[in-house]
Amino acid sequence: MSEDYAGRFRSVAGAFTERVEGVPDGRWDAPAPCEGWVARDIVRHLVEWMPAFLESAGGPPLVVAADVDEEPAAAWVQLRDGLQAMLDDPAVASSELLHPHAGTHRFDAGIDMFFTADVFMHTWDLARATGQPEQLDEAMAAEMLAGMEPIDEMLRQSGQYGPRVEPPPGADATTRLMAFIGRRV
Image (tube, rainbow, N blue to C red; front, side, top):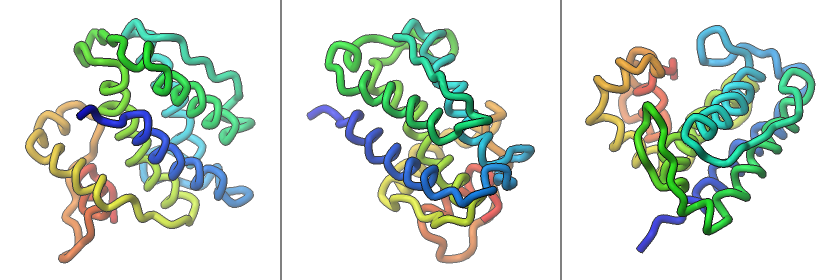
């Protein structure tokens, strides 16, 4: 049985979209949990790195015309919709991505591994920055944490994650995951 990568992206992107749409007036410049970032930079990160990743992996072009500084929500929607269309297209979804640093992956599996997971974790960041509900899907948080813990050292060496933070006793999976990637919970 194959994974429903398109469905998982739709769900994760839907939760991120709720946070994007829920950003109160004036909060796009609120400090984010990612050092040196504001809320708008979370969207900027996603909008900039995903098209560049696809380009360097020989994937289809993903164009975001909206300016993140002026219209962060519109930029996110363009990225989300463009990527969802690719995942929903069987020919694209089953094509191969050959990234010089990330290796070779089936398109949909690669998007799931690298991007859907990133959107999932950054949903918490955007929620924290803008005073919205921070709770993530507990099953997915637990699954991601279980997959990341065995490669802790490699993740830290990548420079993409901060030092691990000790979660409070009895913390739920969302809190444990965010502490694992270095967020102050």
